[in-house]
Structures are given as structure tokens and as C-alpha cells.
Image 1 (cartoon, rainbow, N blue to C red):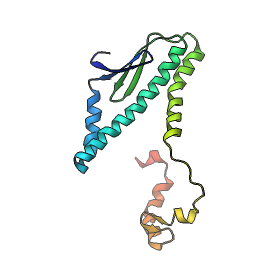
Image 2: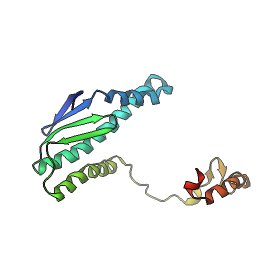
Image 3: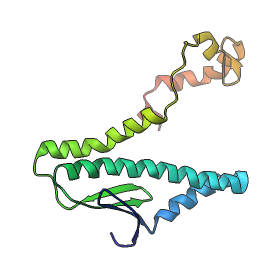
Amino acid sequence: MKWSWPIARFAGIDVKIHATFILIVVLGALQWSAFGLPGMAFGAMLILALFLCVTLHEFGHGLVAQRFGIPVREIVLLPIGGVAALTRNPSKPLHELLIAAAGPAVNVELAVVVSPPAPQRAIPAEQCFRHIDGWPVNHPRRTDLARPLHPLQATPPFAQM
């Protein structure tokens, strides 16, 4: 892809970033600029961590394609995501399905790896919902605040526009 530069190579697949990729990193930094320079650094690192996940997702597609004998030219990272550029389409529908499913499968594996373990004991519901919107659940004022919304909740979403 034009306007892209190589940053890495793994399993014979070039990883490139498009010239516009810097825009999403700058946007991430600006989103956290209220917290000063450390916030901007955090925002940029957050975007880079997200795109590490995007890169792994694209490698899921690319490595499965290689397994079926389809060469992968490159993976390009764009502000809107990534693209694994295969040199040709799979000849069998099953191979196409497995290549397509490999990226989301990597996402599921990443979610399992980075998710915290479940709590060892359940938290009682009355503790979870003791306060909602700053008001105790059984506080009379809370129901007064919600009363004007009841007719709106009864209408279908498309009728509210």
C-alpha cells in the first residue's frame, strides 16, 4: 500500500503503518491532554496497545492463510484498523471461513488472557445496587426523578425521534 512504511516482519509478513496512522495516536494523546503530559503519554500508549491487539488480530488471519498456502503480502495498520493483504483469495469456501474466523478467535484469546479472574464468592445483589445515580435504591426522591421518563420508556425508540 502506498504511503506506508515497514515497522516489523514476522513469519514472512511485513507489518507496515500508513502515514495517516499518526493521526489516531495524536488523537489518543489529545483525548487525555486534560491530565497534562503524563495523560497525553498514557493516551498515546493506550492507542498503541489497542493497535497491538489489532496487529495480532490481523496475524490471526495471515497465519491461517499461510497455513493454507496463500501468501500474505503485508499487514497495514490504518487509523480505522488493520488490513492483512492476501495475494489471492482462498480456493475453498472452508479455507475462506477459517481465515475469516481466525482474527476474531485471536480476539477471544486476548480477552481471556487479559481479563481478571472472577471473584471467588458472589456479591449479594443488595450490596451491588445499594445506590444508583447517587440515591439509595429505595429513596422516595429517586422514583420522583424517574416519573417523567415513564411515558418516554413506553414508546418505541423509532417514535422518539
